Image 1 (cartoon, rainbow, N blue to C red):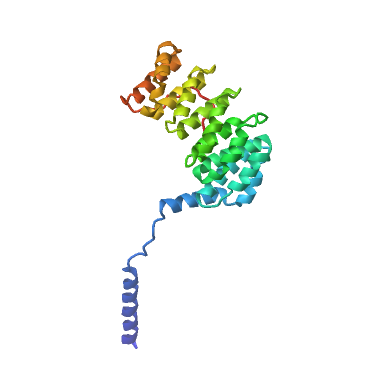
Image 2 (cartoon, one colour; image 1 turned 90 degrees about the vertical axis):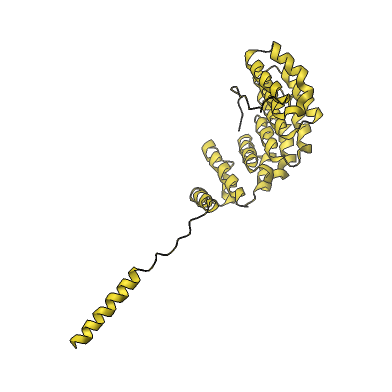
Length: 257
């Protein structure tokens, strides 16, 4: 009996040691995409996209901003709310239209279907946030700018300087050195608002050698303009001549997203 008990103890010890020596299970580290999704899920998945769409129209701006962020992040994961946002841009309250435009801008080219609605919103003089439509066009129309460029060019004559500045920024991303765009931006160098003039200089500089036709106007500005515009014009001229990589020169320009 004693021998039997000793044998059982020895076997138990061996088994325990064997289990203890087994390698730990390998835990796969989540990918960056999985980590990003988990992080977003913690913040946004307490509501479905349809619920966030309703909150785009909320009276509290903080709630609307959270809804914008949520819908943008859902779009990254393939949950499309573009058509619903287009409806809001067309006929929502002024603040809801603003939030919907920002959400579409954040979705970039995934929201290309919204170009016609944003063009119409840009031309709606009753809406005080037309600059948001211009900003959005600069992002959603990158793959097919032909429809957006005429509306943005026309917006350079808007009575609201914020709209004109936003239109300049949008054209700088969509124009690709087109002759009519360069001509329109060259005309904007004489805008009555200094911020718009700086935006126009900045846009032409970013176009580089494609904006060569604007050189006479830029040289004039560099010699006769006020200090803020002159500094930007000098850098833009160097970029167009290929002497340097143009970096944006931003001077207290409101409305940037």
